Length: 90
Image (cartoon, rainbow, N blue to C red; front, side):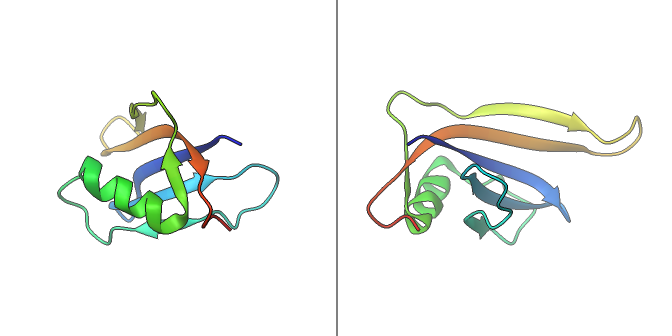
């Protein structure tokens, strides 16, 4: 089963990674990096996914989007990647 992991800086400007597991649940696995800068590295993201019980799907790469919040406001960033549960996923 493939899911989508998302990395965002929209919560108080700090980076957070979460896995959209489908359905109507809002109880998605998440990991807070508890910082605004620097952007979490590829290694840090992989480690967070491992802690959450997921692995990056074969051939998947991070895709970035800018989400404008207004003409004069900062831009929120969202990255996503396909992931698959490992044996430790809840």
